Image 1 (cartoon, rainbow, N blue to C red):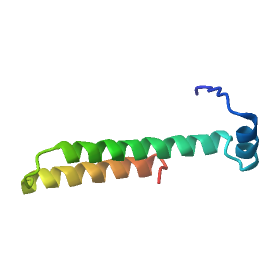
Image 2 (cartoon, rainbow, N blue to C red; image 1 turned 45 degrees about the horizontal axis):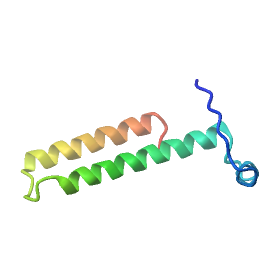
Image 3 (tube, rainbow, N blue to C red; image 1 turned 60 degrees about the vertical axis):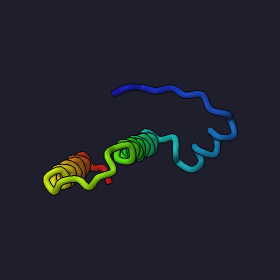
Length: 80
């Protein structure tokens, strides 16, 4: 386990604490969501910069397989 210390403006920290957002569980969930979101944004950017031609069916199947594997791994780790 890693301990993280952050500095926040007092008002923000109070509101976040009142909302239960500063608990270890809430922070972990928010970080996991941001990591998933950024991975999706990166994938979309890569897709947009890729060749504009249609992909061969084999490549589309490989992508679909990788997405299925990633989703299965997230489920095993308890991610949603």
